[in-house]
Length: 148
Image (cartoon, rainbow, N blue to C red):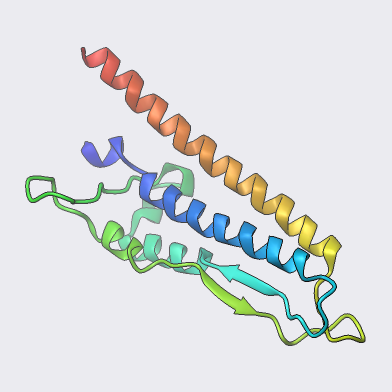
């Protein structure tokens, strides 16, 4: 039961961390659009996150928006942590330099239009994750009010 109360929070936090890193890197790419020989950077975290969820078997219980995740143990009196919470500790955003493409004579491979589109998509995803987190906590607050 407690797993379902605190489900999704760890995954949402990891996703927001990766999306925040992506936003910063896209901003750096745009800032360096006029820097000769600058190679754009990309952030990847989704495959690691999917692998952690799949290794736990949570994906078999429902869609990604319905995954129930265990809470994190920070005290010896807490309930035990399932394999997903432990697997999420290994999920980190990785920074990759894209060197296999060049758009301009000066060696720079930043396409401002493509970066702006990626930034818009990243912002949309980040805002969606923030809304999911807020809804989760609003539900918990409502439940706690009903218990009183």
